Length: 75
Image 1 (tube, rainbow, N blue to C red):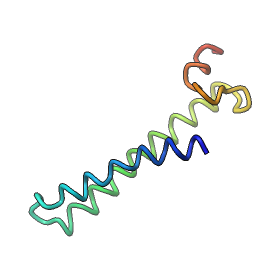
Image 2: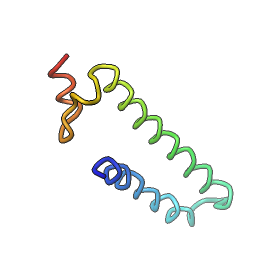
Image 3: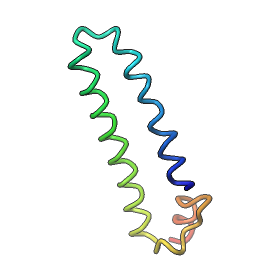
Image 4: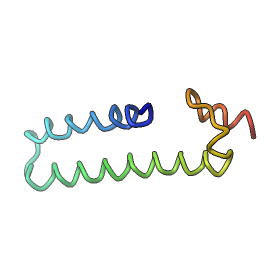
């Protein structure tokens, strides 16, 4: 549940893309492209970090509160 909450807060910012669509020349084209591009970048960042952490330290040895610092401390 904690991970889902973190991902939710990361994707809340996509409302800014739809709000700024009024300033675009072609909002029907630019807003979906910008949304999909941003989703792809965020998804690849989350998957990349979780993959690297899992390759560094087994998942059951990671601390749930601070996984990245804990993984670097163990390595």
